[in-house]
Image 1 (cartoon, protein in one colour):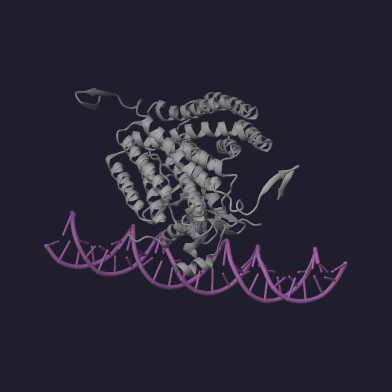
Image 2 (cartoon, each protein chain N blue to C red):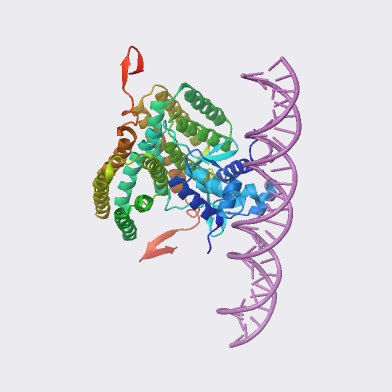
Length: 242
Length: 242
DNA sequence: TATACTGAAATTGCAAGCAAAAAATACTGT
DNA sequence: ACAGTATTTTTTGCTTGCAATTTCAGTATA
């Protein structure tokens, strides 16, 4: 059976949004997308409706735009990620089949392989596939949908951070982070394999903290570019330049 | 601003599915719906895509059909309802505004009013509106989406049970159930209003047990219609008629 | 200079029609 | 009678085109 254009377009747009080729808040012009993707407007419109359901696109009046990053939403997103991730890992440890384990391991190895290369997008996609495979292993579509929404949201946020951030931390820092990520992935797989529910839960929490801390670091611990330019001090009630 | 046909069609189909006018597993014929709703196939197709995202419609090959009741899925659905409901009620107690409380109370009263009438559908819709209002009061769209999916699923299941079940329990049993439901709704509103998180959590659990037990009763405690017709006994290894 | 109006351009929403795939039916040979 | 195949019918997926709405530039006016 051949795949419908609407599905293909939805997947392409979805990838483009996650890769930030389509930027947050960018308007989606149906005619423009129609021409660039080589299909008529109808499948484009159908794909947009799906992406709205996924939370990657929002309506702005009659038009559609890529979902913006709402900083008021960030803590809510991470709350959802923590809770859904813990539940998914508990369920996966309980309900996984051998097939599930094979798929999880395959994606884990794909992530480890892509860690050598400098291709950040492929690495991030392998990471998404690894965690999605765990969601499948939970065998509960309600929890899986909840987890996927949070996962997609945080991954998009993370990519935006690293795409915009200057590379001040150097290669060494990334290597350390990847090494720890790989270590945690292996422990997670192991816990799910041995059906250790509590351990899977704890590891989910640790992995959440690792990924969240990394984004936090990029967002808030980078020295401001202004730091070297100006000396600011507080005099009286406001900021003053000196 | 006038509403798009696609949205209107999606809402009409959603109501039809929840009211069981469109039966589970029923095929959705685009041309037929197009004619009966007085719009062309394009908005019908767009509505179907939305309903698939909502979990009310599923693809069956190239066609679309109303989501069937999968009995393997039932325990998973109730797991999702319990967990999501508890979290939503905790969040609602924490984050509700005065506006939220007004909307919740309005829908609570609407439910109480409709309890006098014999209109089961209106009553069920007021009940859905009450619980959806609580989900809004949680102010977290990820958790709200999770809860809504479970809520819609269980409500559809409940309606199917009562639509198919003979009215053996009489008016008295229904009155008792409604009285208890109203009592719990009032306590839930009160807990959310006073921001008592633990109490809201406990009440969510109690309400879950009430609604689940009611469906259980209908599904499993009804005397089979065969009971009066045949005498069955176990002889040797199998069932035999006598 | 700011603001309200007007007409043109652009963009979305919907309908109709066509092509391809799937389903149903009729047919043929064993 | 029945399995397998050809043919017709039905249904979906997509393209195209048109109508309605929105957007925007230009103009006139306070």
